[in-house]
Image (cartoon, rainbow, N blue to C red; front, side, top):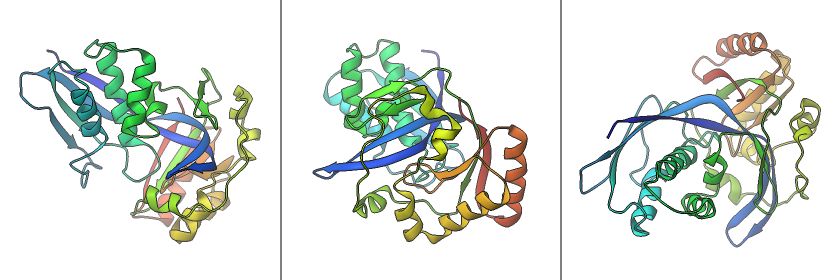
Length: 281
């Protein structure tokens, strides 16, 4: 079988509200998009008794033996959906771990999509969504690389041709523990996105929104607040917001030049921190 290449795009939360909790799982609603930063997945069917999974690239170190990709394949094998087919998978990690960019979850979503579209698994789209949720709560967001809004009931509405932004992604040398951040959520926000509209992607609307996890993350990791303050005061962005549970802080702009200038200023101030310009897709 020929080897196939898949671009697994990073996800960003333009806004995020924590609206409740059921048992140990927090309920969120979010306005999200995808950006032109991606992990590259190589995949092919092989004659082997086991799947062969490898990670390489700048952000491949310390990936656990049990991860979203192994979890997905384990679920498919146990359900006998792969019919004993095995795969070689190599993923070049360009998306940082523990960043709020959903790298691992999007990897699993894209591999699941590939296996479905290539008819290695023959189930309904409804079943694909169920499988994605077994792997991780946000994996279903990556089943389409299209901007969308997930409401309080977990229903996703996608929007083609939503407004685009040029962005600067910044990350300190540490990542944020999603489990730790969510464990400190004590207050919930009243749901706002149950009637999703494309106008919610406008800069005016997004400026008025927030990420409920920011205050918690900033209290636990004070350097994140320092990064946000610097970006807000030095580069004249439309707005600055943490994505997911961090630790990436995103500054949003209307032009590529503004994001490039902002990157140069950021690198002068935070020489050892990761930063990259990108744009929503």
